[in-house]
Length: 170
Ligand code: S3P
Image 1 (cartoon, rainbow, N blue to C red):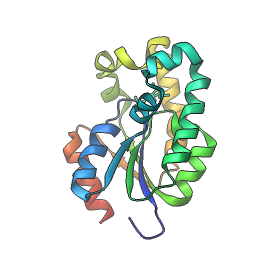
Image 2 (image 1 turned 90 degrees about the vertical axis):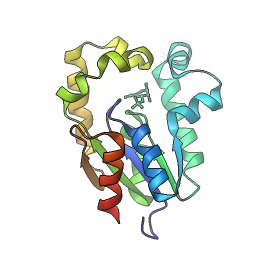
Image 3 (image 1 turned 30 degrees about the vertical axis):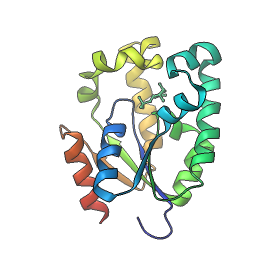
């Protein structure tokens, strides 16, 4: 991270490995790690599933915006954002201005192998067909591609991906 960058922000589609890679990267770089979804759950004392049920997606997005706004005032943090967070203009603009934004790019075919593991706690995945998920993936990729750095995860393990990032940014 250079002096002008406050934090590192990992973005990408749900299940791309942002949380696991973020934890690994925080160990390598000696920086604090914050998973925004987990922070939302802790603040609300509810799971994301329940927040989606009781407040709808818009309620969840509002929580995402306000908590990210609050937490990103601090420095030297590695954030992992939920797959839809970077699509929010406010979050996107803030990240691109003062953080190093890294897109973990996973192929759709590799991603789809993970569906059985992801399904239980991803409300959007429960609501959509595979075809709709592919559309979402394609449309979101345009936004994710605004990141400062794009890392192809391929079939790398999370520790290997974290090493790749660390080597690239140092
Ligand atoms: C979402 C992704 C999830 C979580 C929520 C919505 C999305 O996070 O924020 O279920 O809109 O893609 P992960 O990207 O960690 O799965």
